[in-house]
Each structure stands twice: as C-alpha cells, then as structure tokens.
Length: 558
Image (cartoon, rainbow, N blue to C red):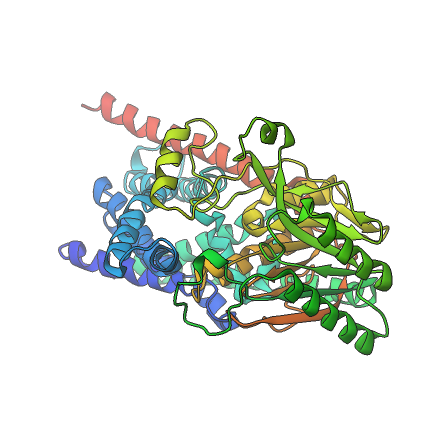
C-alpha cells in the first residue's frame, strides 16, 4: 500500500497537490511543452486517484480532495485572470489576488461534480461483495469502466470555465493529439482517465501478477494510441502537402485602446489605434507577398479590435480599403461593431454585435458574421440573457466591461469558390458547436480566430486560447489561423501542427504564408461526441444500479 491509512489525512492532500501541479504543466505556456511532457500528463491524475481510492469510505473527504485538486489547478493554470483585474480593472494587486483566490475556490466545485463518478466508483469497489454481478472481476470491470465514462460524459455536458478538457492537456504531442479527431477533445480525456486509473491501481495493489497484467494493458493502450496518431499523420500529411493552398496574410499591430493609454504595461511597443497605421502595415505586407510569392494574398486579416469600432459605418474608410482590394485582388477580413438599426432608432445603443465582414473590390460585402461567444465578464455577464440587474451592477463597477449580443449564424464568408472562411471572433474558439456546424453544414475550409488579447497583458491566456484553436483544427480537419492584435498569432494545419513560428507577445508583427485549404477526414464530424455522451449516460445508469444493489443488500441484512 502506497499510503498508510493512518496517515492519509496528511499524505493525500500532498499527493493531490502533486497531481494538480503536474496537470497544470499541460496548459500552454510560452511555447508548446516538450512532447515527452504529454506522456507524463497521461498519468497526471494517478496521485489523485490513489488518494481517492485510499479514502474511498470517507466520501466527504474524497469530495474535498477533488475540490482541492481543482483549486490548485485553477490557481496555477489561470493566473492570467489576475492581470486584467490589475491593469484594466484598477484593482490593487493584493485585492486582485484575493478576488482570484475566491473565484478559484468557487470554480473548483466543478471538479467535485466532475470527479463524483470516481468518488462513487471507488466507494463501490470497497463494497463489491454487495454488488449484483456474478464475479469479482466482472464487478471491478463494470464499476471501473462506468466511472470512467460517466466522468467523461459529465466533462462534456457540465458548463466549464474556458471550455478546456483533460484531453486538451495532450496539446504538446502531435501524435497523441490525433485522438481529438475521433470524438472531440474529450477523447483524450478517456485516455488520460484510463491510464491514470491503471497506474493508481498498480500503486495500491499487492499482487505482482495483477500488476504485470495491468502494466501490459497500459502498454497496449498507449501503443495503440501512439500508432493510431502516427498512422493518421502519415496518411494525411501527403494530402496536405499536395492540397490546394491559399496565400494568406495577417497583421499584429499591438494596439492599446486610447482610453487605456495611461496604463503602464510591461512593454514599450503598444500603439494607439490608427486606421492609417493599419493601411500602412497592410501595404507593407502586400508588397512583401508579391516579392515572396509573385502574387498578392487572397486574404488579409485584421485582428479583433484593430479596425475602428464602427468601421462598417464609415464609407470613406471602406472606400480606402476597397481601392487597395481592387488593385491587389486581395480580400480584407475585418472585425468591427454591428449595430441593430432598429434599436439605434429607439436610442438603445447597447444592442450591438461584434462581427466580421469582408471588403472586396466591390466594397463591404453585405453578409456579416456575428460573434457567438462574447467574452465572459469582458463583453457579457453570465445572467445577461435572463436577468440583467447583476450584469448592470458588474458593469457599473468595472467601467471597461461591455455588453455584446451573441450571434447564431454558422455559414462561412465566401472569399472565392476555393476559400470559404468562418471567423472565430476571440472566444468563439472555445465553441465546439460553431466549428462543428460550420464544417459539417457550412462547408467551411478555413477558420480564422480574430482576437484581441491586450487585456491579458503578458500572461499565458493567449497560449491557452491557442490550445483550443488547435483542438478546433484537429476536430474539423481544417487549417486555422489565430490572428491576434497583441500576440500570440500562429497557424495550425488540419492535423493540429504549427505551420509557422508563433509571434511574440506585445510586439507588432505580421505574417504571410501558404495555408492548406483542403479539409481532411475526421470521425468527429460524422458522429460528433455522441459515442462519449451515450457511454456516459449508460455508465451513469450502471453506477446508479450498483448503488441501489448495495443499498438493497444493506437493508435486507440489517
């Protein structure tokens, strides 16, 4: 036994802390972690599961351990939350950190819910003699598989902060990450849960024969995942190399909104937003494109919040861009504010959308793509759709917070017959639904994540968002361009691999490259996450049946 039952009140929290610290390594930092780190992350939950197994009969303490894991993980992985509160919310560092600790404590309740099937499952394994199934082996298999898939199902259906999953922790390994193409990024969650469960079993098992058998299972499953990923990359790599490619450019102007110029950010490279600065950057990258490719780009991307807020209602500015488009045959993808004209007439100017539109040689195209996911607490408040008072109070405290209406259309913007683009405006990258629908029914063949992360200063928030962009490219088999106002900006192909070096944070930059636009097959677009959702539902029913059988046994033997 790894942990003495007499000392688990001390040892278990230490093990759980180690588990959370290891898992936090999987969150994107200044660059992708070493691929070998992804291998370590497959057993990151083993110390947590060992602790939950040892104290399985103390259910409340087991739930506390799940909460403690979540608290530590949130505290380490989402430290970026503090910086906007300090730099843009005007809070003192101590107050901002105190508020962040409180938020972590509340959000950690999510992990209590997520790991509740393991709490139930480990308790049932200690009472396996009372289960209705015929043999001990069958009982162990049914309970173990049920708690694994029940937890995965919960991960999919429970609302979660930033929409990450344990499967997204495999982002460092292009090979292991190919699991995402099966049933979405929770496919990797199943893998991590499985390996961590097996390792935790070995840690407390005294039977050498059983441990050898479990080790063989771990090796078999890990090898199967590795060979699947290697096979998929080999299968589709040549297709991507031979596929149609579009020349695409994007800018990173590093603008700081004028009403925030008094903020002392850790950089000297920010610039006050300027339409003419954008035009000059655009002209420069267009000329570079012609020198490099002997052709102008098919698409030039301006990131979120770089064009004037009401660009769509400035004919002179649109005309300036139109002329450049006419001369170069380049389509400009621009994000700005869309106003509900009816509400404008009634002076309700808060009814606005964040939207992306194309400027071509014909001017501004009529179709505007509206943002699906307003940034929580920055552009929306969780209760805005059904109770406006809390959001209004929040916005009265944090003056820079706004209120943006969510969009629902998923059809792409058509640049030309071979290039159909769906903009993922900022936090739209967290939406699996948008990417799924636009690929399956909208025939999108390229995603563009236009974002403005100046609010996150020099934190790792942009890199965590990059992981979710990578997941969208893997799930849909489409290339994805992440174009950020302040960095990081990068490009993923349909296999989730970086096509170019990421741009630095808080520095002006621009990129131009040839991007594959031919989609590759993913099972996810055929079956979505239904296999995991159904498995989770059936597994939850099995756990309930097991609980009932134990309760019935105890009642009959009182």
